[in-house]
Image (cartoon, rainbow, N blue to C red; front, side, top):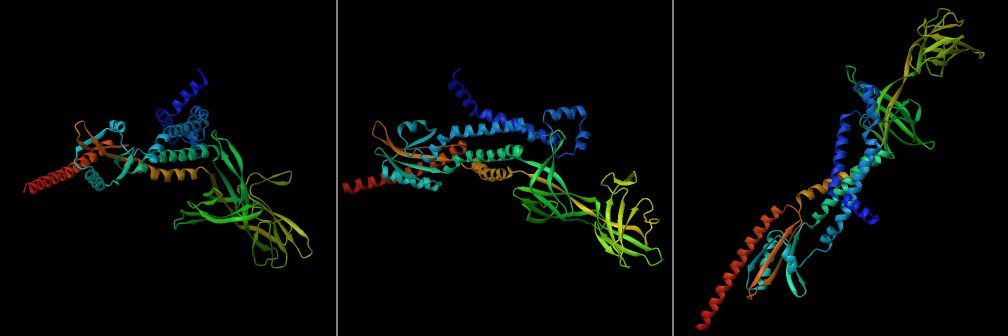
Length: 486
């Protein structure tokens, strides 16, 4: 098989409506599976493990069925459908363009023979017949125009010529939707998560792949959390989570917004959603009770983390170190985790001579500095923990194509279903015996049964008008003959 023959066969396959229908059915089937089978990364790994056995989950991952919309084979199927759609459109466009730009305006003998619907009505006056046909067609919403070709005259009338372009509008909308949602977002789109403590900034998010693994992605900006909180109902149920965010780009704050659930922060096509809220293992401020050893009144001291406060006698107290979950090894304090399950605090008590005494408070082991040779006994009274905001970051650049496609579809589908290109031609023809007839023919590009009914109505109206005119003409002729004889 030669190259030209191979290309012709491929071209016929790609321009076949059956090929396009096959691919769109495949896309529909796997899209439906994507709504039934739990998908990564939106589903938690624990939920996946509860839903499927290890062997089932292994095969689902191998086949890409746990992340269908990002699987290479699914993107390839959607791409093939888009290619078929382009080829089908290109193959049919020249004929449509000819119909739209240069329609046949005069019905010659060969053209009249091809029309499925036509009628011939005997007439005596050509000019009157054309005028009557123009009046009747106008009453049915047509705008007839007289055309002349090779010395012959006729009428051409049409309605809703724009409807021939509706199918291409629908094709274009499908290309925007499929290419945007499935191809662009499937290749370059992403969705990840990040936790940002108050007063800190993060520039990396965590992505989950279709096998349950994780990876890091660096954003083009830093997300700084300037505040986070929770509003509750009277019974204590969560009412609203909010986060005050600022975006840092090239060392400068470029945008800021207080977000809440369903009110994302959008910057350069990247959406930042409020996903969760919680407390970190690091306090924002610590409150201590300072009891003088000489028996004086206890003093309440509130100190920011890594900050300091002045006591009543002029000495200063500072927080040197916070250990949320301590353990002791070789007489040194170490941290096991970031959860405040077993906290310890190292304090610094500085006197007027600048001498600093280091003191430890182990919260679950007495919560006191007693026995550490200091003029005060300190105890942890409370802590205001730093909040963190859990953010979901998504980037779907194909969504703009989807919106364009939806708008085009909203215009294209009504036109495709409810509008039809209707064309009607009329001209005067003769027979072998010298008789004259008004010939009328018509065609519609779709809903032809409906057009046939309208054509019958136009024919009836035209026959009635021309019959009345013929009767009036015959009466006038008889009257003229009577006057001549008289």
